[in-house]
Image 1: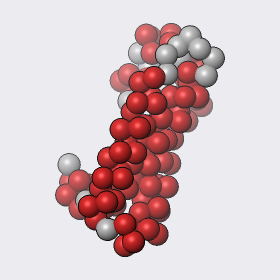
Image 2: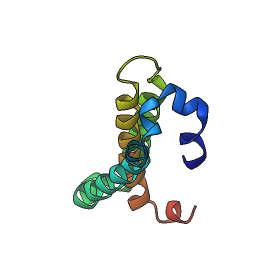
Image 3: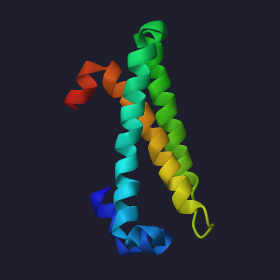
Length: 106
């Protein structure tokens, strides 16, 4: 994300990220989603089982990516939608990272 978020084209489409606080928030919300996903799978992973947890994490990541792709500026909520999509993708990544040991090595 570091090379893309500071690109002039990206800042032109999402002008809020020109502010360094917003830029940091957009970048870090993914890690927050990963934390919540890891906590979720810590609490419910035994009940779900490994295969269902991996499938759940993958589906959640796909949903998050679709939400990110669908935010088309210049609508007024494009940056907010992008942030929500990053959080959802982080949730799925947190589930998968906590469930699949070799996924962390990648």
